[in-house]
Length: 328
Image (cartoon, rainbow, N blue to C red; front, side, top):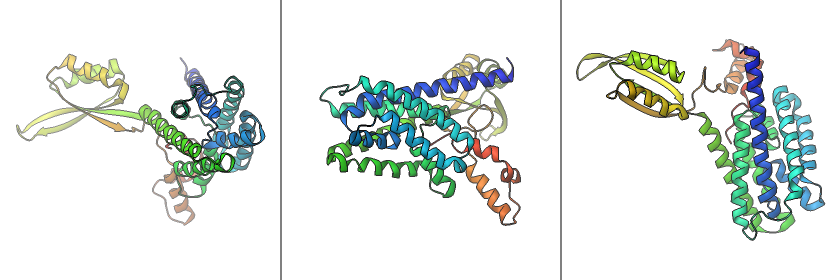
């Protein structure tokens, strides 16, 4: 298969998974949260306030408000982010418009807290799935992106501040502390579940293998598990003998297969396994370089030779690295 076809298939897979994630979000929001008249964070929360006050469908206000924000942020956040966000808000608004008429009453009757939890779980899983595949739901993402471009405030912190303000403003409509507390519960659940989905996808495992059959194990891992191995030379201080160690990085879901390969070849191999939260480089996640780019450009503007001159002039890295992996 050609490189071009692989890229097309990879992009197609990303867009399909973004749609699946947004569908989960839309279902959780319209079936469990909106019928309980609870306002959540983000642009759907602002849209809910408009809906409860003026009766404008959530889908319409969500789409229009996001477009206004994107128009303001066009020059700040970059073309790549805007295009991806337009796709996300369009799909989400369509799904909200389709699903909202079907759920006029709470999905689980007389169980407000249960609806809040289930809705938060579905929304968090949906947002996390969309983020993992480089998608965006718009809303406070756009505000956070603009703030992070001009200050050192993180995206996650900005989104938290904005969401708290949106949820708290619902008191002006309902004069109910209970609904505000439910909104905070949903915010906590969405944030926690979203983080879990994102970090689970990025978690990796590091194996350190001591075995006399290191060559066979390395060949098997490369041939069967399709993961690279690094051979390290060491000395056993007790025996004073030279030893060979293999260092292997893999995704967490691949760990069981690699461990079976090791034990099938050498049941007496000494193996250590450690969780690694984020592995960057070929075959793994791309490193976020936003701060390095800023420092390099600042140094160049001051007439100082930056440590990494290529970052000071590479705008493509900045466009793709800023929002490829988010922590909320």
